[in-house]
Amino acid sequence: MPDDHLILRPLYRGDPTSLGPYRLLGRIGAGGMGRVYLANRNGTEGLYAVKTLLVEGLTTDGDRVRFAREVKMARRAAGLRTARVFDADPQAPLPWLATEYVAAPSLGDLVARCGTAHPAAIARIVADCATALEELHSTGVIHRDLKPHNILLTSQGIRLIDFGISHASDLTRTRVTLGTVAYIAPEQARGEPATAACDIWALGATLCTLAAGHPPYPDTGDPVRLLALVSRAAVDLRDLPAPLRPLAAACLAPDAADRPTPAELRVLAERGTAHRSSRTDAAEPPDSWIALISDYENEGEELRDQHAPDPPAPGHERTQRIAGLTPEGWKAAGSLISNLTMLIVLGAAGLLTLITVVAVIVIALSP
Image (cartoon, rainbow, N blue to C red; front, top):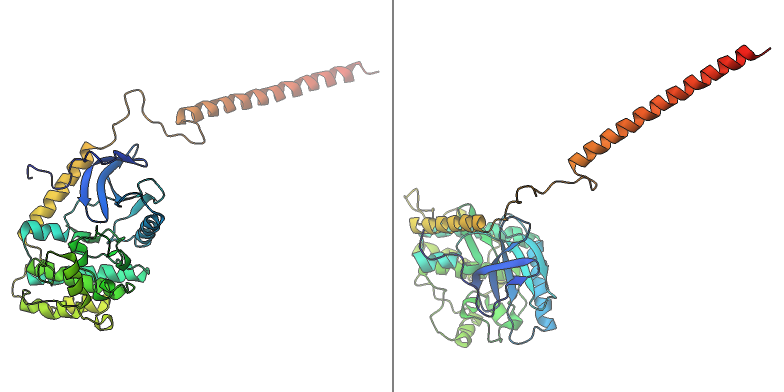
């Protein structure tokens, strides 16, 4: 494994050391809207991803409402392709959300470190993401912030994370990054309500990054200019491999009504509309991607072992109690009850014998 950590970064001077019952071990992600820490919790095994809300100055009621909305969406979206929510406190001085920790690189990490993938592999990822969106939308949840860094790729498939607190009304805030703007739908950029079709657009823009190494826009370096391009749906697909252009164009239709549903998009990708190849392994991630995924999983296991709860000290093993008593206590109680029962039986027998003797004597002395 590489000498440097893939997952964990040290806490900064201004970072908290704990949030609620979670002890923060280091940073694992940061962006314009939030910061994510790796954490553990006393008395429990496993690791957690704890996300905080980043704000300029004091946390406002509006910030808390948006964060609480993200928590609600994340809880509703729990499934095989999302990270499970364990705990949250939107009213804390620094609002936080604790979810299942998944030791895997994001699609953004994979492209940045290893380059792009084969078109057939990209088509398979798009199909998997479409399935995830179909499940997500069936719960009434819209992701709103789908992008390469919010899609993890494990050895078992993709996982969606970070149900974004960035909405169209937030786009004027200075903390919004180019990365977020480059994947939002034109209607979001124009301040219109987000719909399920916005997630399809974001998946199309993500497809472009996986195939060309960048979103479907020129590198403006300016969020305002980029926002103008996005609002006009001024995409450029010339850098895409030809087999992927029809699939990307379907997702990036300017009119939301013209975009496929997740189910329709999955069918398009699975049919090989994006690409047909004679290579049997073409739909698999590149070897470099597979190696990086393995590195993440190995480091995740090392971190879990390193931060596992200490075993009880000898002579102080934790004993399971039932109704307040240990197994030994219940055994002693059983013995006591047996002894009392025996005494009662013997006492009753003795009393009956005494009554019988007295009765015999009285009968014998009677005239």
